[in-house]
Image 1 (cartoon, helix red, strand yellow):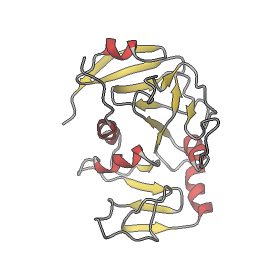
Image 2 (cartoon, rainbow, N blue to C red):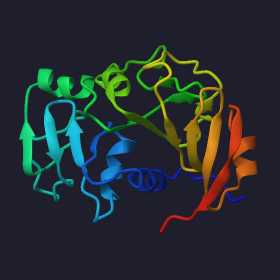
Image 3 (tube, rainbow, N blue to C red):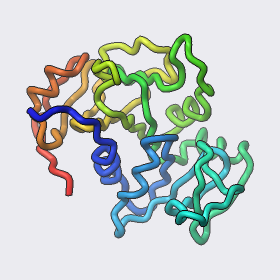
Image 4 (spheres, rainbow, N blue to C red):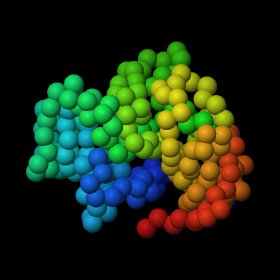
Amino acid sequence: MPEYIENKEIIAQRIARFFKTGDVVNLGIGLPTLVGNYIPKEVTVILQSENGLIGLGPEPAPGGEDKDLTNAGGKAVTILPGGCFFDSATSFGIIRGGHVDYTVLGVLEVDQEGNLANYKIPGKMVPGMGGAMDLVAGSRHVIAATTHFEKSGASKLKRRCSLPLTAAHEVDYVVTDLGFFVVSGHSFILKEVFAPWTAEWIIAHTEADVELAEDILLWEPA
């Protein structure tokens, strides 16, 4: 196997293939924002940000940023024709009302029971969980987007999260830079292996129970 080098782009490319035209999608802070760069041209999704925006467009061109137009992470954004702005109460009414089809969140840890930890490391100053608790509870599908390994080399996919939970039993899918997993509640089911890795190597380097899907695929990104 080649030396592991984290690859956030492959994660974003694979997640972008989940969506169909008309889906309402919330992309979390950090890695998930890359997903918008890979949504196929023939697919039109409605991007929502919990700070009160819907109909987000592509990143603004350098120099074209509007300091008054940012997403929930404070990153400059654009708004497509038909997009709109509203207060936080309306925004969270959309989320809590079950109108978001997919939420994509970065994680510190995710476990085989579908538990998610992404807001706190004991002893470190962090901004808090933000809207993540509402998003994972209110969205129809929750995708955890993460590199496979921590900086220490430990797997971020766990049998049980050790960090404080953002939500319990809410994650449906996990996409890392090694593969695509479905959360079964008692294990991770490996559905796709990303070239050049192998299923055997992934299992050996994951701190969780991993089962192979009957229809497991090898995916080679463009």
